[in-house]
Length: 284
Image (cartoon, rainbow, N blue to C red):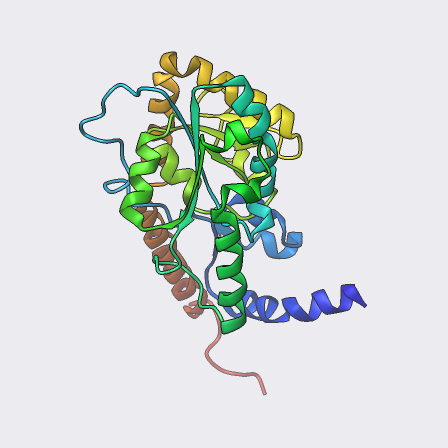
């Protein structure tokens, strides 16, 4: 019965893929979720981000202290809020001078999905609960170093990314949000979950670092290690930014999508062009 429901739920997408001239998805992992006969029709082009907006600060000063940021609403289990929360006691014990900020973008930001009244009520209660550091069940002496900011506007979100010594991005496995790309573009050191969507972008030790999504202690150890080495990791920050400029800049991706669209249109014209060798009449 569960299988039948899933098939029915997918019918609209099967129908759309059967009728479209060009099918695009944003990651190899997403394409791999389709049956082979459909995946072969899908092109992978991420929408990209605005790298003029998401960029390192022009007046970047040497970071003082250690700031770890995590952006993900507590109500989305695939975004790792609970996993990050579980790693905090060990992380804060190992790094007694680090501060932790937990936040997420306001619903009013571009790309937010519309919500019904029940969704909004549930989300509001969860956000209010999450804003209380007491809800994180941390030891008393550690709570003063953890700040749950709740939803923040876009410009403030960018400034927090720029100020972060380490930005933690988790997805288990789930379609990538732009948060990973934005953090890399702003020059933050990324510790991301070692899951297929994230591995498409993060090369461990080259443009970021990977951690086990399901192992809170190992996650804490990885973050602590990156914090310890952070003064000597400017090349990793630079590699991260270059990865985004090269592969995920919004203007670059728009040109790639335009090229695909034009090629698809040309192919359609070719397919519809009559064969000059065909006979013009019928034998009957």
